[in-house]
Image (cartoon, rainbow, N blue to C red; front, side):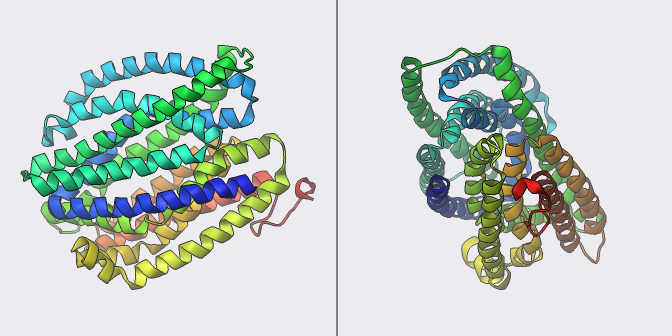
Length: 442
């Protein structure tokens, strides 16, 4: 347990500085791109993340779970299989993407170089995922923390340099913003792959036992396939979300230009502020996936229960403090850092959405560790269906508009949090108050 919290604190500290830089990154983009440019950037970003998601195939999660559960003598065999098939998969995916992406309508509204940047990201993300999953499974969180920090500082440095010394039109400015993402990913790729191959060489020299490729891929795919399906669904719905929200706002009587600006304030400002503390939740998730997987495999339910109680308590403390600050100081925060006081009301409306997601993120790690990936998928589908229906209906009402959008988003977060929590309680055999209801935890 001490190693768990030591790794978590390391991730939280580095993630805090990373989030501070992310805050600065979004401030710079809000200032340089303007509300329209920020809206364009945030509109296409989910589509790009959906494409890049396929390249990772959720290998960080499946590999980390495998490493945590299996003896060290099987690690080299597994990694050899993964590297071999990742090369084949990446070549196929890159060729397929090169054929399809030029015909995707959303890219027609952006600089023509953008689609080639997406292609460049595919092999980078694929191989970085292997290294990230291995280090997560071995709980070498220093390397994960360093890579996360490195990505932010490189992106921030590129943004400051390029926008400080050069002047661009709107289309080129949006392209430059994406170039900084790709550039930072390249630096992280070089760092993680260097560290990974140093350890891989040591593994080859150590004691290794053979494990059939079919067994390896059965274990990996049992996690990767449903998790990738979940992430694809999540990415698809986020790719649809800009058009859903803007469509609802237009139906309520707002012009298309104003709807784009409002979405830019929602996605580029309100969500940036509200999700700022989520680096703590993501740090917990990174540590929880291998930890829960290992303890569940060992059937140590008492330790899992105690850990969950501690996570819920810590999350409640920092979450309530955070959303209280955002709610009562929304106007000065948005005005001072983003020069957009209009976004303040959106931040205030979404406080339940932010708070609940601080709990949802570590709860997803428990579901993954328990192997309840199908449950996680169905929870996400149901919450999204109800949320999007409410977003469109309520957002289309002239008397609600952005208020209706916020209600729909909050509703989805409530449904998802309740479904996750009740499933974990049922699996572990304790009540919603985290008290034992059967002999498993006695």
